[in-house]
Length: 101
Image (tube, rainbow, N blue to C red; front, side):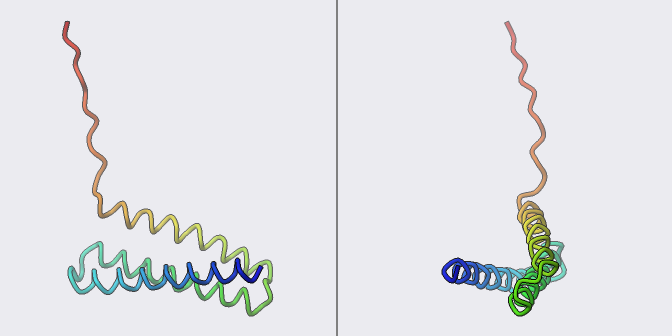
């Protein structure tokens, strides 16, 4: 269990640092853009997730806080996916292929 928690914390620290770097870079390079605003929101969501994780440990894994931590992980994953998708742009239009005899 200690190794699992150690790996979990290393992943959390890495995610926190990556989100902070992403936010700072986008706010510096393209301030006020939708990308920069999304990066700030993503960082705030990850900050809330980190606080929930810390509270979960301090309360000796109270089930309600632990479930909130798990639920917030889904919110962070969904928003991180949406943030990444915002950089790629719209899906390409379907291409119709006409077969001629």
